[in-house]
Length: 178
Image (cartoon, one colour):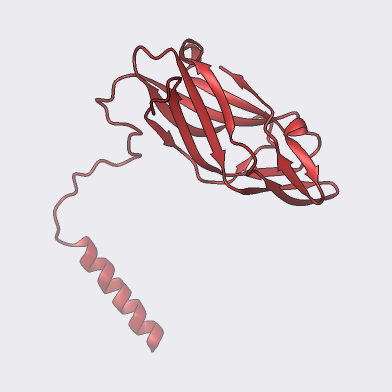
């Protein structure tokens, strides 16, 4: 009897929710990353794991993306993912975020702060990746970014993941491709 009553109430609720009411005029789809009137060139930042020494999985999460001019002025940036990123897929570079560089800025500093811990799996077992030591940092010439509209950080897994007992310590060794 309870199931019948709950089903009837659920159906009534759905009918009432769909009836009456005004037509929605909200835009559908994803929200824009930045206001349309924000001036400057728009760029993407991606992350890809390279030189995998045999891990079947290496997962990290991004906490923060910060982009500044070389003199320290913060630039508009938007983190696009909070999901765990699988770095062992050599065919995929993950979209980390987007940022806007105003006219007149020739170089930017980019910093990607990872969550405190990630995880790895290999033939001999798995464990945690301690990512607290240092963020991923680099300086990018805007002229290089403008060539393709993005920068792809190649994180060298073979050199970056140092054995520390059963866990791995991330000491970032990276190369940036434009």
